[in-house]
Amino acid sequence: MASWVSRTEIDFSCQICQDIFKNPVVLSCSHSFCKDCLQLWWTEKLIHECPVCKRRSSRSDPPSNLVLKNLCEAFLQELSLQEKTPAESEALCSLHSEKLKLFCLDHQQPACVVCRDSKVHTNHRFRPVDEAAQDHKEELRKTLKPLQDKLGTCNQVKVNWDQTAEHIKEQAQQTERQIRKQFKNLYKFLQKEEESRITALRKEEEQKSHMMKQRIETLSREIAALSEIIKVTEKELRAADVSFLYNYKAAVKRVQQCPLLDDPQLASGALIDVAKHLGNLTFNIWNKMKGMVSYSTMILDPNTAHPDLIVSEDLSSVMYREVKRELPKNPERFVDYVTVLGSEGFNSGTHSWDVAVVNDRDWSVGVTGASVPCKGEILRGFSSLWFRDGKHVAYSPSVTDEVLFVEKPLQFIRMHLDWNRGTLSFFVLETYTHIYTFTHTFTERLFPFVSTLNPKPLTILPVEVTTKLQR
Image (tube, rainbow, N blue to C red):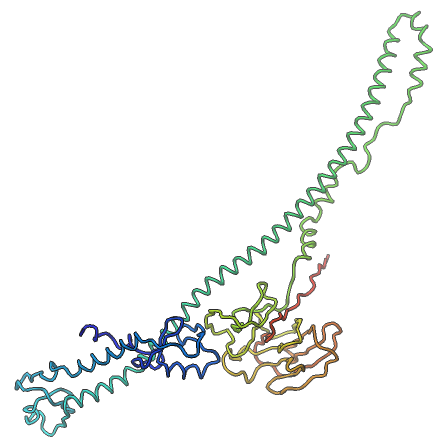
Protein backbone atom coordinates (compact mmCIF):
# COMPACT_ATOMS: atom_id res chain seq x y z
CA MET A 1 0.00 0.00 0.00
CA ALA A 2 2.89 2.34 0.75
CA SER A 3 4.14 2.13 -2.81
CA TRP A 4 0.63 2.95 -4.05
CA VAL A 5 0.46 6.01 -1.79
CA SER A 6 3.84 7.20 -3.06
CA ARG A 7 2.44 7.83 -6.54
CA THR A 8 2.40 11.48 -7.54
CA GLU A 9 -0.67 13.49 -6.57
CA ILE A 10 -1.06 14.53 -10.21
CA ASP A 11 -2.56 11.12 -10.95
CA PHE A 12 -5.46 12.09 -8.69
CA SER A 13 -5.54 15.81 -9.53
CA CYS A 14 -8.21 17.78 -11.37
CA GLN A 15 -6.68 19.43 -14.47
CA ILE A 16 -8.65 22.63 -13.77
CA CYS A 17 -7.78 23.33 -10.12
CA GLN A 18 -4.67 21.07 -10.05
CA ASP A 19 -5.78 19.74 -6.64
CA ILE A 20 -6.98 16.30 -5.49
CA PHE A 21 -10.42 15.58 -6.94
CA LYS A 22 -13.39 16.71 -4.87
CA ASN A 23 -16.69 15.13 -5.89
CA PRO A 24 -15.36 14.16 -9.36
CA VAL A 25 -17.68 13.84 -12.37
CA VAL A 26 -16.91 12.09 -15.66
CA LEU A 27 -17.69 13.35 -19.19
CA SER A 28 -18.61 11.23 -22.19
CA CYS A 29 -15.02 11.59 -23.44
CA SER A 30 -13.85 9.81 -20.19
CA HIS A 31 -12.10 12.88 -18.75
CA SER A 32 -12.92 13.67 -15.11
CA PHE A 33 -13.00 16.97 -13.19
CA CYS A 34 -14.20 18.35 -9.88
CA LYS A 35 -17.90 19.06 -10.22
CA ASP A 36 -17.60 22.66 -8.99
CA CYS A 37 -14.53 23.30 -11.17
CA LEU A 38 -16.31 22.06 -14.28
CA GLN A 39 -19.45 24.10 -13.66
CA LEU A 40 -17.34 27.22 -13.07
CA TRP A 41 -15.40 26.51 -16.27
CA TRP A 42 -18.61 26.16 -18.27
CA THR A 43 -20.03 29.46 -17.01
CA GLU A 44 -17.22 31.20 -18.92
CA LYS A 45 -17.78 29.26 -22.17
CA LEU A 46 -20.40 29.50 -24.90
CA ILE A 47 -20.72 25.74 -25.20
CA HIS A 48 -20.30 22.84 -22.78
CA GLU A 49 -17.09 21.16 -23.86
CA CYS A 50 -14.34 19.14 -22.23
CA PRO A 51 -11.56 21.48 -20.93
CA VAL A 52 -8.95 18.98 -22.18
CA CYS A 53 -10.05 17.51 -25.52
CA LYS A 54 -12.77 20.13 -26.32
CA ARG A 55 -15.36 17.50 -27.22
CA ARG A 56 -18.86 18.80 -26.59
CA SER A 57 -20.72 17.33 -23.64
CA SER A 58 -24.22 16.05 -24.27
CA ARG A 59 -25.15 16.59 -20.61
CA SER A 60 -25.05 19.71 -18.48
CA ASP A 61 -24.96 17.59 -15.30
CA PRO A 62 -22.41 14.81 -15.91
CA PRO A 63 -22.57 11.76 -13.60
CA SER A 64 -20.32 11.31 -10.59
CA ASN A 65 -17.19 9.23 -10.97
CA LEU A 66 -17.67 7.10 -7.86
CA VAL A 67 -14.65 4.89 -8.54
CA LEU A 68 -12.33 7.89 -8.80
CA LYS A 69 -13.94 9.48 -5.75
CA ASN A 70 -13.28 6.37 -3.66
CA LEU A 71 -9.70 6.17 -4.93
CA CYS A 72 -9.04 9.81 -4.03
CA GLU A 73 -10.51 9.39 -0.54
CA ALA A 74 -8.38 6.28 0.01
CA PHE A 75 -5.32 8.12 -1.31
CA LEU A 76 -5.84 11.07 1.06
CA GLN A 77 -6.42 8.71 3.99
CA GLU A 78 -3.24 6.74 3.35
CA LEU A 79 -1.31 9.97 2.79
CA SER A 80 -2.52 11.27 6.13
CA LEU A 81 -1.50 8.03 7.85
CA GLN A 82 1.90 8.17 6.21
CA GLU A 83 2.47 11.70 7.48
CA LYS A 84 1.74 10.46 11.02
CA THR A 85 3.82 7.28 10.82
CA PRO A 86 6.00 6.62 13.87
CA ALA A 87 9.00 6.05 11.66
CA GLU A 88 9.49 9.80 11.32
CA SER A 89 8.60 10.79 14.86
CA GLU A 90 11.01 8.22 16.24
CA ALA A 91 13.95 9.39 14.13
CA LEU A 92 16.96 9.90 16.45
CA CYS A 93 19.57 12.64 16.59
CA SER A 94 22.90 11.42 15.29
CA LEU A 95 24.75 13.38 18.01
CA HIS A 96 22.62 12.76 21.12
CA SER A 97 20.47 9.73 20.19
CA GLU A 98 17.40 11.66 21.23
CA LYS A 99 14.16 11.92 19.27
CA LEU A 100 14.10 14.70 16.68
CA LYS A 101 11.05 16.57 17.94
CA LEU A 102 12.19 20.13 17.09
CA PHE A 103 13.12 22.08 13.97
CA CYS A 104 15.73 24.84 14.04
CA LEU A 105 14.48 27.77 11.99
CA ASP A 106 17.94 29.31 11.81
CA HIS A 107 19.76 26.17 10.63
CA GLN A 108 16.68 24.85 8.83
CA GLN A 109 17.21 21.31 10.13
CA PRO A 110 15.63 18.91 12.68
CA ALA A 111 17.02 18.91 16.24
CA CYS A 112 16.50 17.21 19.58
CA VAL A 113 15.96 18.83 23.00
CA VAL A 114 19.69 18.45 23.78
CA CYS A 115 20.60 20.22 20.55
CA ARG A 116 18.34 23.11 21.56
CA ASP A 117 20.39 23.72 24.71
CA SER A 118 23.78 23.31 23.03
CA LYS A 119 26.09 26.20 22.13
CA VAL A 120 25.61 25.49 18.44
CA HIS A 121 21.97 26.60 18.73
CA THR A 122 22.40 29.50 21.14
CA ASN A 123 19.57 32.05 20.69
CA HIS A 124 18.10 30.03 17.81
CA ARG A 125 14.39 29.77 17.11
CA PHE A 126 12.68 26.37 17.21
CA ARG A 127 9.33 24.92 16.20
CA PRO A 128 7.81 21.50 16.77
CA VAL A 129 8.65 19.15 13.92
CA ASP A 130 5.01 18.64 12.91
CA GLU A 131 4.33 22.41 12.75
CA ALA A 132 7.52 23.10 10.79
CA ALA A 133 6.79 20.24 8.40
CA GLN A 134 3.27 21.52 7.80
CA ASP A 135 4.50 25.07 7.12
CA HIS A 136 7.21 23.87 4.75
CA LYS A 137 4.84 21.52 2.96
CA GLU A 138 2.45 24.39 2.40
CA GLU A 139 5.30 26.53 1.10
CA LEU A 140 6.44 23.72 -1.20
CA ARG A 141 2.88 23.25 -2.47
CA LYS A 142 2.74 26.95 -3.37
CA THR A 143 6.07 26.63 -5.16
CA LEU A 144 4.85 23.50 -6.95
CA LYS A 145 1.54 25.08 -8.01
CA PRO A 146 2.99 27.02 -11.04
CA LEU A 147 4.62 23.81 -12.26
CA GLN A 148 1.32 21.94 -11.91
CA ASP A 149 -0.44 24.74 -13.76
CA LYS A 150 2.23 24.65 -16.44
CA LEU A 151 1.83 20.88 -16.75
CA GLY A 152 -1.94 21.25 -17.11
CA THR A 153 -1.47 23.87 -19.81
CA CYS A 154 1.08 21.72 -21.63
CA ASN A 155 -1.27 18.74 -21.48
CA GLN A 156 -4.08 20.81 -23.01
CA VAL A 157 -1.73 22.14 -25.69
CA LYS A 158 -0.55 18.61 -26.47
CA VAL A 159 -4.15 17.44 -26.90
CA ASN A 160 -4.77 20.30 -29.33
CA TRP A 161 -1.52 19.64 -31.17
CA ASP A 162 -2.40 15.95 -31.48
CA GLN A 163 -5.72 17.04 -32.98
CA THR A 164 -3.85 19.42 -35.28
CA ALA A 165 -1.54 16.65 -36.50
CA GLU A 166 -4.53 14.41 -37.22
CA HIS A 167 -6.37 17.28 -38.91
CA ILE A 168 -3.34 17.93 -41.14
CA LYS A 169 -3.54 14.34 -42.37
CA GLU A 170 -7.27 14.65 -43.00
CA GLN A 171 -6.76 17.96 -44.82
CA ALA A 172 -4.05 16.44 -47.02
CA GLN A 173 -6.23 13.44 -47.87
CA GLN A 174 -9.28 15.56 -48.63
CA THR A 175 -7.25 18.04 -50.68
CA GLU A 176 -5.67 15.18 -52.63
CA ARG A 177 -9.13 13.80 -53.39
CA GLN A 178 -10.23 17.19 -54.67
CA ILE A 179 -7.11 17.58 -56.82
CA ARG A 180 -7.63 14.13 -58.31
CA LYS A 181 -11.29 14.91 -58.90
CA GLN A 182 -10.44 18.14 -60.72
CA PHE A 183 -7.82 16.42 -62.87
CA LYS A 184 -10.20 13.56 -63.54
CA ASN A 185 -12.70 16.08 -64.91
CA LEU A 186 -9.94 17.61 -67.04
CA TYR A 187 -8.85 14.19 -68.24
CA LYS A 188 -12.44 13.33 -69.07
CA PHE A 189 -12.86 16.57 -71.02
CA LEU A 190 -9.57 16.08 -72.87
CA GLN A 191 -10.38 12.46 -73.63
CA LYS A 192 -13.81 13.42 -74.96
CA GLU A 193 -12.27 16.25 -77.01
CA GLU A 194 -9.62 13.89 -78.35
CA GLU A 195 -12.23 11.34 -79.38
CA SER A 196 -14.33 14.06 -81.02
CA ARG A 197 -11.41 15.37 -83.05
CA ILE A 198 -10.21 11.89 -84.02
CA THR A 199 -13.78 11.07 -85.08
CA ALA A 200 -13.89 14.20 -87.25
CA LEU A 201 -10.55 13.23 -88.80
CA ARG A 202 -11.74 9.68 -89.49
CA LYS A 203 -14.96 10.98 -91.01
CA GLU A 204 -13.07 13.29 -93.38
CA GLU A 205 -10.71 10.45 -94.23
CA GLU A 206 -13.66 8.17 -95.00
CA GLN A 207 -15.42 10.78 -97.16
CA LYS A 208 -12.34 11.71 -99.15
CA SER A 209 -11.19 8.13 -99.48
CA HIS A 210 -14.64 7.18 -100.81
CA MET A 211 -14.52 10.07 -103.27
CA MET A 212 -11.06 9.05 -104.48
CA LYS A 213 -12.19 5.44 -104.80
CA GLN A 214 -15.11 6.50 -107.02
CA ARG A 215 -12.87 8.67 -109.17
CA ILE A 216 -10.27 5.93 -109.48
CA GLU A 217 -12.98 3.43 -110.51
CA THR A 218 -14.29 5.85 -113.17
CA LEU A 219 -10.79 6.49 -114.46
CA SER A 220 -10.10 2.77 -114.51
CA ARG A 221 -13.17 2.18 -116.70
CA GLU A 222 -12.02 4.93 -119.09
CA ILE A 223 -8.55 3.40 -119.23
CA ALA A 224 -10.04 -0.04 -119.97
CA ALA A 225 -12.22 1.37 -122.82
CA LEU A 226 -9.32 3.24 -124.37
CA SER A 227 -7.06 0.25 -124.02
CA GLU A 228 -9.59 -1.97 -125.83
CA ILE A 229 -10.02 0.50 -128.75
CA ILE A 230 -6.24 0.93 -129.08
CA LYS A 231 -5.71 -2.81 -128.94
CA VAL A 232 -8.32 -3.54 -131.66
CA THR A 233 -7.06 -0.70 -133.89
CA GLU A 234 -3.44 -1.75 -133.53
CA LYS A 235 -4.53 -5.25 -134.56
CA GLU A 236 -6.18 -3.82 -137.71
CA LEU A 237 -2.94 -1.98 -138.49
CA ARG A 238 -1.05 -5.26 -138.46
CA ALA A 239 -3.51 -6.97 -140.86
CA ALA A 240 -2.80 -7.58 -144.57
CA ASP A 241 -3.40 -4.68 -146.91
CA VAL A 242 -6.55 -6.04 -148.52
CA SER A 243 -8.02 -7.03 -145.15
CA PHE A 244 -7.00 -3.63 -143.70
CA LEU A 245 -8.69 -1.77 -146.52
CA TYR A 246 -11.87 -3.79 -146.08
CA ASN A 247 -12.00 -2.78 -142.37
CA TYR A 248 -10.50 0.67 -142.69
CA LYS A 249 -13.75 2.67 -142.60
CA ALA A 250 -15.02 0.77 -139.55
CA ALA A 251 -11.71 1.21 -137.76
CA VAL A 252 -11.63 4.95 -138.45
CA LYS A 253 -15.24 5.32 -137.31
CA ARG A 254 -14.49 3.38 -134.09
CA VAL A 255 -11.52 5.59 -133.26
CA GLN A 256 -13.35 8.82 -134.12
CA GLN A 257 -16.34 7.85 -131.98
CA CYS A 258 -14.11 7.59 -128.90
CA PRO A 259 -14.02 11.16 -127.47
CA LEU A 260 -10.71 12.63 -126.39
CA LEU A 261 -11.59 13.97 -122.93
CA ASP A 262 -9.50 16.45 -121.01
CA ASP A 263 -6.72 14.94 -118.96
CA PRO A 264 -8.08 13.80 -115.59
CA GLN A 265 -7.26 16.25 -112.80
CA LEU A 266 -7.31 15.84 -109.02
CA ALA A 267 -10.00 18.12 -107.62
CA SER A 268 -9.06 20.83 -105.09
CA GLY A 269 -9.55 19.78 -101.46
CA ALA A 270 -9.02 16.11 -102.12
CA LEU A 271 -6.41 15.82 -99.36
CA ILE A 272 -7.03 15.77 -95.61
CA ASP A 273 -7.33 19.31 -94.26
CA VAL A 274 -4.41 18.89 -91.86
CA ALA A 275 -4.36 22.59 -91.01
CA LYS A 276 -7.96 22.41 -89.82
CA HIS A 277 -7.20 19.54 -87.48
CA LEU A 278 -3.81 20.63 -86.16
CA GLY A 279 -3.78 24.40 -86.56
CA ASN A 280 -3.80 26.07 -83.09
CA LEU A 281 -4.94 22.74 -81.68
CA THR A 282 -3.91 23.36 -78.06
CA PHE A 283 -5.29 26.91 -78.13
CA ASN A 284 -8.63 25.79 -79.53
CA ILE A 285 -8.87 23.08 -76.88
CA TRP A 286 -7.93 25.53 -74.11
CA ASN A 287 -10.42 28.08 -75.45
CA LYS A 288 -13.13 25.44 -75.38
CA MET A 289 -12.19 24.51 -71.82
CA LYS A 290 -13.27 27.94 -70.60
CA GLY A 291 -16.77 26.56 -70.28
CA MET A 292 -15.65 24.22 -67.50
CA VAL A 293 -13.12 26.57 -65.90
CA SER A 294 -14.03 29.18 -63.30
CA TYR A 295 -11.95 31.89 -61.70
CA SER A 296 -12.72 33.85 -58.56
CA THR A 297 -11.00 36.98 -57.29
CA MET A 298 -11.71 35.80 -53.73
CA ILE A 299 -11.01 32.32 -52.38
CA LEU A 300 -12.26 31.38 -48.90
CA ASP A 301 -9.68 30.10 -46.42
CA PRO A 302 -11.16 27.13 -44.51
CA ASN A 303 -8.42 27.36 -41.87
CA THR A 304 -10.00 30.63 -40.67
CA ALA A 305 -13.62 29.42 -40.65
CA HIS A 306 -15.55 29.30 -37.39
CA PRO A 307 -16.33 25.65 -36.42
CA ASP A 308 -20.03 26.18 -37.23
CA LEU A 309 -19.28 27.33 -40.79
CA ILE A 310 -19.13 24.79 -43.62
CA VAL A 311 -16.93 25.86 -46.53
CA SER A 312 -17.65 24.19 -49.88
CA GLU A 313 -15.10 21.87 -51.49
CA ASP A 314 -14.26 24.43 -54.18
CA LEU A 315 -13.81 27.14 -51.46
CA SER A 316 -16.37 29.42 -53.13
CA SER A 317 -19.34 29.27 -50.72
CA VAL A 318 -20.06 29.02 -47.00
CA MET A 319 -23.09 28.13 -44.89
CA TYR A 320 -23.93 28.02 -41.18
CA ARG A 321 -24.59 24.71 -39.53
CA GLU A 322 -24.17 23.71 -35.89
CA VAL A 323 -22.19 20.50 -36.15
CA LYS A 324 -19.91 18.67 -33.77
CA ARG A 325 -16.53 18.77 -35.45
CA GLU A 326 -13.14 18.13 -33.92
CA LEU A 327 -11.15 21.06 -35.28
CA PRO A 328 -7.75 22.10 -33.95
CA LYS A 329 -7.37 25.45 -32.23
CA ASN A 330 -5.13 27.02 -34.85
CA PRO A 331 -4.46 30.73 -34.35
CA GLU A 332 -6.11 31.73 -37.66
CA ARG A 333 -9.53 30.27 -36.81
CA PHE A 334 -12.33 32.57 -35.64
CA VAL A 335 -13.81 31.41 -32.35
CA ASP A 336 -16.32 34.02 -31.16
CA TYR A 337 -17.61 35.20 -34.57
CA VAL A 338 -19.10 32.98 -37.28
CA THR A 339 -16.64 34.36 -39.82
CA VAL A 340 -14.34 33.11 -42.57
CA LEU A 341 -11.64 35.16 -44.32
CA GLY A 342 -10.51 35.28 -47.90
CA SER A 343 -7.23 33.50 -48.53
CA GLU A 344 -5.49 36.58 -49.95
CA GLY A 345 -5.03 39.95 -48.29
CA PHE A 346 -4.42 43.32 -49.96
CA ASN A 347 -2.10 46.15 -48.93
CA SER A 348 -2.19 48.18 -52.17
CA GLY A 349 -4.09 48.61 -55.42
CA THR A 350 -7.75 48.13 -56.34
CA HIS A 351 -9.66 44.87 -55.97
CA SER A 352 -13.24 43.73 -56.60
CA TRP A 353 -15.24 40.62 -55.71
CA ASP A 354 -18.91 39.65 -55.92
CA VAL A 355 -21.08 37.77 -53.41
CA ALA A 356 -24.51 36.15 -53.80
CA VAL A 357 -26.45 36.52 -50.53
CA VAL A 358 -29.73 35.13 -49.13
CA ASN A 359 -31.87 37.61 -47.22
CA ASP A 360 -33.66 35.39 -44.72
CA ARG A 361 -31.01 35.16 -41.97
CA ASP A 362 -28.21 37.35 -40.63
CA TRP A 363 -25.08 37.79 -42.74
CA SER A 364 -22.24 40.26 -43.14
CA VAL A 365 -19.61 40.96 -45.82
CA GLY A 366 -16.68 43.35 -45.85
CA VAL A 367 -12.98 43.58 -44.99
CA THR A 368 -11.00 43.19 -41.79
CA GLY A 369 -7.44 44.10 -40.87
CA ALA A 370 -4.67 41.54 -40.46
CA SER A 371 -4.20 42.63 -36.83
CA VAL A 372 -7.82 41.93 -35.87
CA PRO A 373 -7.87 39.08 -33.31
CA CYS A 374 -9.66 35.85 -34.13
CA LYS A 375 -10.64 35.38 -30.50
CA GLY A 376 -12.59 37.74 -28.28
CA GLU A 377 -14.55 40.84 -29.20
CA ILE A 378 -13.57 42.70 -32.38
CA LEU A 379 -13.49 46.42 -31.67
CA ARG A 380 -11.47 47.84 -34.55
CA GLY A 381 -10.05 47.24 -38.01
CA PHE A 382 -13.12 46.15 -39.96
CA SER A 383 -15.77 47.61 -42.28
CA SER A 384 -18.87 45.66 -43.23
CA LEU A 385 -22.35 45.60 -44.70
CA TRP A 386 -24.80 43.70 -42.47
CA PHE A 387 -28.21 42.20 -43.07
CA ARG A 388 -29.86 41.98 -39.66
CA ASP A 389 -33.47 41.99 -38.47
CA GLY A 390 -34.63 42.53 -42.05
CA LYS A 391 -32.48 45.67 -42.49
CA HIS A 392 -29.29 46.42 -44.38
CA VAL A 393 -26.82 48.18 -42.08
CA ALA A 394 -23.37 49.72 -42.55
CA TYR A 395 -21.11 49.01 -39.61
CA SER A 396 -17.53 49.79 -38.61
CA PRO A 397 -15.88 51.16 -35.46
CA SER A 398 -16.51 54.69 -36.74
CA VAL A 399 -19.94 53.98 -38.28
CA THR A 400 -22.39 52.36 -35.87
CA ASP A 401 -25.48 50.67 -37.31
CA GLU A 402 -26.27 53.13 -40.10
CA VAL A 403 -29.44 51.78 -41.72
CA LEU A 404 -29.21 51.87 -45.52
CA PHE A 405 -32.01 52.49 -47.99
CA VAL A 406 -32.24 49.63 -50.45
CA GLU A 407 -35.07 49.52 -52.98
CA LYS A 408 -35.37 45.74 -52.86
CA PRO A 409 -33.63 42.95 -50.95
CA LEU A 410 -30.06 42.49 -52.09
CA GLN A 411 -29.16 39.33 -53.97
CA PHE A 412 -25.83 40.10 -55.61
CA ILE A 413 -23.30 42.52 -54.12
CA ARG A 414 -20.10 43.86 -55.63
CA MET A 415 -17.40 45.12 -53.27
CA HIS A 416 -14.69 47.41 -54.58
CA LEU A 417 -11.63 48.12 -52.45
CA ASP A 418 -9.29 50.96 -53.33
CA TRP A 419 -6.58 50.53 -50.72
CA ASN A 420 -4.48 53.48 -51.82
CA ARG A 421 -7.42 55.93 -51.74
CA GLY A 422 -8.82 54.37 -48.56
CA THR A 423 -12.29 53.44 -49.80
CA LEU A 424 -14.45 50.32 -49.63
CA SER A 425 -17.61 50.59 -51.74
CA PHE A 426 -20.66 48.34 -52.07
CA PHE A 427 -22.82 48.15 -55.22
CA VAL A 428 -25.91 46.30 -56.45
CA LEU A 429 -24.24 44.00 -58.94
CA GLU A 430 -27.13 43.78 -61.43
CA THR A 431 -27.45 47.54 -61.89
CA TYR A 432 -24.17 48.72 -60.35
CA THR A 433 -26.21 51.01 -58.11
CA HIS A 434 -24.12 52.47 -55.29
CA ILE A 435 -25.10 51.28 -51.79
CA TYR A 436 -22.47 52.67 -49.43
CA THR A 437 -18.79 53.66 -49.23
CA PHE A 438 -16.50 53.51 -46.19
CA THR A 439 -13.64 56.00 -46.17
CA HIS A 440 -10.58 55.31 -44.06
CA THR A 441 -6.81 55.62 -44.19
CA PHE A 442 -5.68 52.03 -44.45
CA THR A 443 -2.36 51.17 -42.84
CA GLU A 444 -2.34 47.36 -42.84
CA ARG A 445 -3.18 44.40 -45.03
CA LEU A 446 -6.93 43.89 -45.43
CA PHE A 447 -8.68 40.55 -45.89
CA PRO A 448 -12.18 40.09 -47.34
CA PHE A 449 -14.52 38.26 -44.96
CA VAL A 450 -17.95 36.64 -44.93
CA SER A 451 -19.99 36.09 -41.78
CA THR A 452 -23.32 34.26 -41.77
CA LEU A 453 -25.93 32.56 -39.61
CA ASN A 454 -27.71 31.28 -42.69
CA PRO A 455 -28.03 27.55 -43.44
CA LYS A 456 -28.26 28.51 -47.11
CA PRO A 457 -24.90 29.16 -48.80
CA LEU A 458 -23.43 32.60 -49.42
CA THR A 459 -21.41 32.25 -52.61
CA ILE A 460 -18.43 34.10 -54.04
CA LEU A 461 -19.31 34.58 -57.71
CA PRO A 462 -16.75 33.66 -60.39
CA VAL A 463 -15.66 36.21 -62.97
CA GLU A 464 -16.04 35.68 -66.70
CA VAL A 465 -12.99 34.15 -68.33
CA THR A 466 -12.18 35.66 -71.72
CA THR A 467 -9.45 35.09 -74.30
CA LYS A 468 -7.58 38.10 -75.62
CA LEU A 469 -5.24 37.73 -78.59
CA GLN A 470 -2.39 40.18 -79.10
CA ARG A 471 0.02 40.44 -81.98
